[in-house]
Length: 157
Image 1 (tube, rainbow, N blue to C red):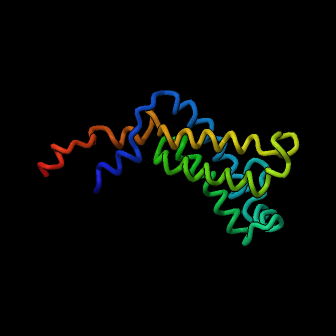
Image 2: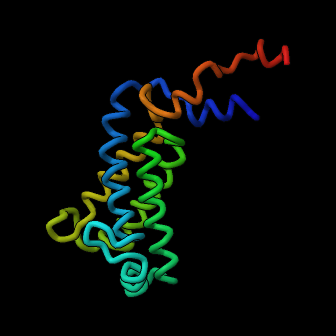
């Protein structure tokens, strides 16, 4: 196992600010993904979301709905927990980028017109978490405790 690589992905010196960003953003993404996957919170589920995605040119629709819903749902849960935060943040940022350019960009900025402002906000928060990591209060932090990379220790093994 490459401790240096794991630390690079998981370790974060960010404090409580990451927690403040991670939890609400993760909950929002997970709820949005559950609409696509399970039809929760008034969503259309895989079949309905898949039909809509196919209608806007994202084919095959059900697969695209599954991929987007999974990225949002599981990526959101990972952000809430602070587990594999950087990979989850990269995935959710990419998903929001796709949403912006496939659905919202032609409607302008504002949400009142189904614009991209909300997806852009979620993307920016995700990119911030990608850069700074999960922070002190996270599973990532628990996993990396005591695993600081030391060339001296590596040479002894």
